[in-house]
Length: 360
Image (cartoon, rainbow, N blue to C red; front, side, top):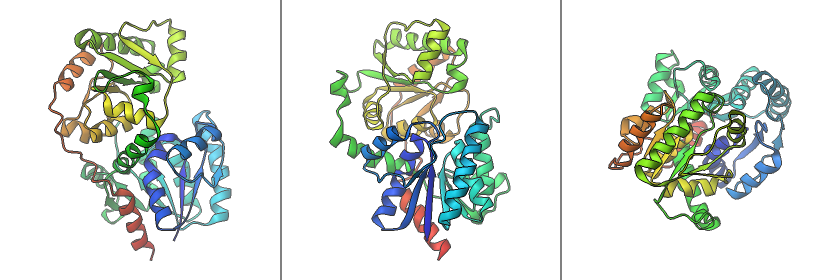
C-alpha cells in the first residue's frame, strides 16, 4: 500500500502528525506532498522540525491568492506529482482549498481518497470551508468521521454507511504527543513572564470577524468587559492580518489586553494548557481546549464542532460584547469535568489499520 498525504496549512500538519508518525513507525511506503497554501516553505520546514516530523518530499509553493488561483495552481501541480507517483490512496484532512484540490485530482486520476475529519458541518454555505468539506466528503472513498454526530450528517446526505468509519479525531493524538514534545523544547510561560491560570488566551483570525469593522470593534469591547469582570490579563497572539485591519479601522487596544507576536505551535499549546479561559473563533482550538480541559468561548454564531457544546466545554457567543461577557462568566465558573468526545488518542493507527484492511 502506497499512501500520499496531501496537506498545505499548519493545522493540517498538526492533525496529520500522528498519522505521519505511525507511518514512520510501520516503515510504510508513503510520501507527504505540501501545497504551500499559506506559508513559505522555509517557515513550514521549521514547523516540521519542531514537531519531530520528516520534511515533505514535495512542495508546490502555490502561496496565498484567490480561491480560483490557489486551487488552479494546486490542480496542475497535484496532477503531475500524483500521476507520476501513482499512490493507492491520498489522505487529506479538514476543509481547506488543499483538501478539496487533493481529493478532486485524486478522483480524476482514479486514486482512492481518504478524508480525515469527515462529516463536520456548520450548515453555513457562506463559508468556503463548508463547501470544501461537503464536496470532499462526496467524492471520498474512506470517510474517517471523528464522532457519531459527524457520521449522522454524512448518512443524511446519502453517503453509504460502508464508506464511513468512526475513528475519533487525530487532534487528540496530536495534542497528547505534541504536549510531550513541548515540555522538552519550549517554556513560553517563562519567556512571556506568565503564571499558569493567571491569564486568558484570545485568538481571532476568521475573515468574517476581522475584516468586518463593527464585528472587530465589538470583539474588543467584549474582551474589555471580560477584563473588567475578572481582572485577568487577556493575552492575544495577533495574526498580521488582524493587526493590519486594526490599523485600517483606527482601533485602539483596550486596557487589559496584551498583544504579542504570533507564537509557534508548541508555545501556543503551552499557552492553551495553562490558560484559565480561551476566547477564539478557531475550529481547531475549540477541540484542543476541550481535550486540554480548558473552558472555551467561541466568537462565532455557529460551529462545526457541536460536540464541544454538548459536553459543556464550549459556548457560542458571536461578537456581541454583552454575549461575550456572559459566555465568559458562564464558562469561567464551569466545573471543567466534561468528557472528551474525540477519542482516546489512537486515531492515526485506527485510520491506517482500516486502509490496510480495505486495500489488502
